[in-house]
Length: 149
Ligand SMILES: CC(C)(COP(=O)(O)OP(=O)(O)OC[C@H]1O[C@@H](n2cnc3c(N)ncnc32)[C@H](O)[C@@H]1OP(=O)(O)O)[C@@H](O)C(=O)NCCC(=O)NCCS
Image (cartoon, rainbow, N blue to C red; front, top):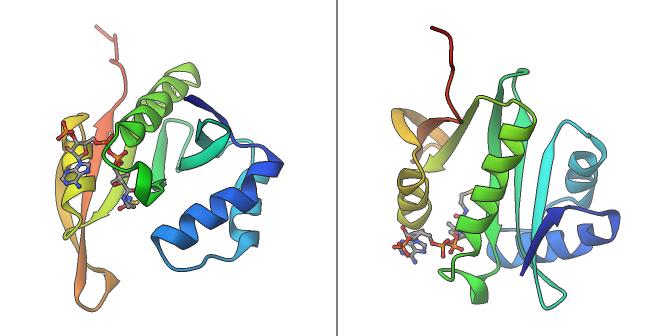
């Protein structure tokens, strides 16, 4: 298994994983992420098959928000989500990103557990974040430490 930065040829596979797990996404959406170097876009490859991806978008020079973390159904619960998340943490450290934040659907127990396990702190509920009936939990994690004093 390897984790690496997305390449142009990966976009069609990213779209097919996304389509399989969620609804279909506009391909331009992923191409636009791919084209912005400040956006961290990593993919997990198993035996030359793209099995998942993670995307984080800068909010400032110190903070990124996780836009998506998706693992193809047949590969879920095998540790690939954890590996992508840890690779994102390393990339954040390399580029001096100090905070990662995200919104997770309040009903998405697997994702919530994963984020909690990796140090994200639930901060508040975003009411009606996904739809009239679907709330999100806003979570935040500090990457590394600040040595000030
Ligand atoms: C959420 C998701 C990214 C997790 O990735 P994954 O590769 O399946 O997760 P891992 O195998 O690394 O599991 C790590 C932890 O996640 C949690 N988890 C994963 N699958 C779970 C499940 N089916 N039920 C409960 N907890 C689960 C557990 O805490 C697990 O740790 P444990 O094995 O010590 O209990 C993946 O299931 C997924 O793509 N889901 C659909 C898309 C999604 O909801 N993305 C997140 C919001 S954008």
